[in-house]
Amino acid sequence: MTMQLNKNKGILLALLMFPVWSFAQQTSTNSSLSYFSNPLFNILFILIIALLVIIIVMGKALKSVVESDYIANKLKKKREEQSKNSGTKIASILILLFAASQLKAGNAGSANDWMVGGLDMPTFYLMLCIIAFEVSIIAVIYYITITIINDGKPEKVKATKVKSKTILERINASVAVEKEKDIMLEHDYDGIRELDNDLPPWWRYGFYVTIVAGVIYMINFHVVKTGDLQDEEYDKSVAQAKLEVEAYMKTAASNVDETSVKQMEGTDVEKGKEVFIANCAACHGKEGQGTVGPNLTDPYWLHGGSLADVFKSIKYGWVDKGMKSWKEDLSPVQIAQVSSFIKTLSGSNPSGAKAPQGDLYTEKDTIATDSISSITDSLKIAKDSIK
Image 1 (cartoon, helix red, strand yellow):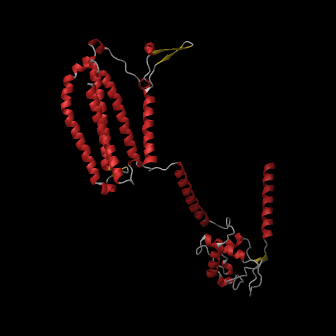
Image 2: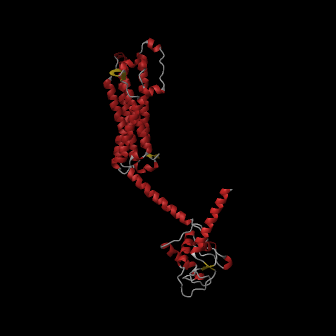
Image 3: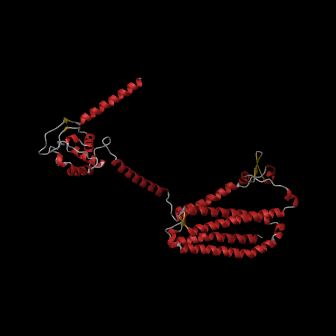
């Protein structure tokens, strides 16, 4: 019986290792692709390994049940009959697995047309067949174990109804209090005795899962290298963040208006000069000296001389004085560039400059106005606080 079980286990392991061998062949022919980069494959692979662990554990339990002579003699004839058909069944399974792998190889050129969750269809259904095969083995082992136990019991014991264990009792598998004397060790520490309890199943199976996860992690990140380690993932995240910041700054720059405009420099001023010469020189001159429109180089302004005032004048225009609105022709960034260029013309004193128009403007006026506004706001807050 023991030799037969070991033989069956060897055949089962050979069957389960067949997809791993097929995966290795696939990897050797196309090293740029890896199944372990596919989440669906990892889930199915972990499920296959977990079911294999359950089969091994249940097989050991079945082995301990059938070791008795009574059970061995009773099942001898059944075992001989099953052994005759096992070869045919195993051969059929091998043929199916081989055919699935050949189907996969035949469809390699059109893998994109047969995908399930990013996994090629032959591999997906092959793994489903393996999982179904393992589940059927578990069901058969469970049925055989229960049948053997019921058949091997005396009539009196069979008539006794056994209390079923709860899920908590099954995952802990602790020894009953009345049976602790059977596993009592001789260690005695101040009257405290030690029990030779096994590790609970939940702990052992959890440990097996961590081993499987560790193997998958090692293959994914260190062997096949389909995943990024922490340093590489960090560098990619930083690079992506920089791209997002640049995209945001471009969007923010296009949303500039008279309340948020700032003085530009360098290439932005040069671009503003080009736009000014192309659109504004007809009325203000190429150097801002003024022709039909006012002189832009002196400190006198008709509608305010701050950067925000210039931006506002260009954007909305002064139709009653012959200046059109440019907000439909120029983008907010272009208006900001032209405004910044105009501010650089202050004090340039070009030849043929037009006589000053409007009121004298200095930067101090803006500072004083801002200070008065701040004082007014402070007084208002204080007044509200007193109320």
